[in-house]
Image (cartoon, rainbow, N blue to C red):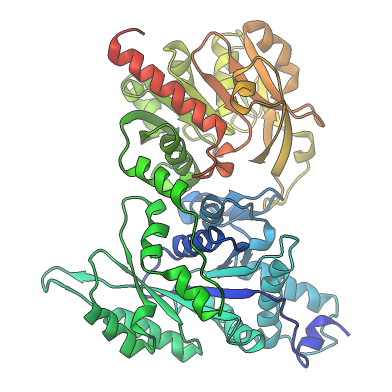
Length: 556
């Protein structure tokens, strides 16, 4: 009998684990993702195996076709899933790689349900939100729990806020999950807002009360309330929230605004979040190993030096579009005891005002990934400025492609060399569609995605950074370096320092006669963590610091 039909009659088997569901109320962007990641860190540092899922209510199958201005960056996992940027927070906090199992959307759920209906799996039954959609959501959580890592804790964060129509099937599925797994195995955390009203000089609890009231109407009773607040909250306010929200005062926790998101786990540890979670599950609350985390956070908050980095991009109006790049700079800065001051520069402004005017203040220049021709000439001008002025340069994905185009034009003599993405009939297509992409019509999930191998050439800056010949990095792109132009560019002085050993695709380029000019086709920012900084970001920031010191001492 098909699973959809069986589930209408029999209870599904829930894998043995502890399940934490994180919901949010009042407004979005309260920090559900950071709360989930922080709890994950605090549990892992006590010796428990943890994984985290993001449940996104939107109907897109994944964010891969969404504008960065709509959704922020698309976070790519090793297995090629295009996911919500919160998975980046999960990986950066708990230092564990996520997979396609860690992100589920309404689009994916409905796509699976419709496919099963088309395949006849429901044996002619009427397909409904309950039980078919909710069963599919429950299955997604169970599949993650069954993953080879055998997690002891599965933390599931649902996007949006309580009361959103889109999230109702997920909340109903969580309600059913609670009944199936039992109260000893399921716990609900509700993240809410305590707004400060300056005119009254008061922190107001009413929005939290209404949010919990709405959650309880749906059938969910929070066990813990994490209250986002810019002001301290006292015992009186905690008791008031506890009284009206049906929880104990000790289960009301303040999530104070922090200078760095990496302070949040330490703040929630002071609130005893993980200890209380473990107590409610009847588990031992061991002492967490947080010394290394504290040391790095102290370097973020109290650095002894600083460096100025310019990021020349297309989506600079929304910094979440480059979220992982910003975080990777924080990681490198913490490792080097330096504040990395990042300024987001619109590539179109470089086209209008000139690279000299826009970039002269920076100690290092980075060009990130992106799509489309808008701003491409500004990025090429930025590359030229960095190359000619010996400013440390780092190109990522499209940044590599722009570096190749600039070098081909201005050094190798291939006049107006370009990418066929921007100029299909260009005379010198140094960047072109991959052969496997030429017949692709469907946009979603069809790029070169996920982890690919790269062989590094000894004696290069790339090899020095990694310290090994074979590396694996994550990709998200359709266009590649055109190997027809490898010899003329090598002759002109470009070094191809990294190549995919299976397909012969160029992965990394660099210049010898430059303090630090390195570009990669992959996205190294996706693998940087606070406790495990990415070597390319480390070396780029290090080179930028050296350039700044030379500039300050007049030795350049």
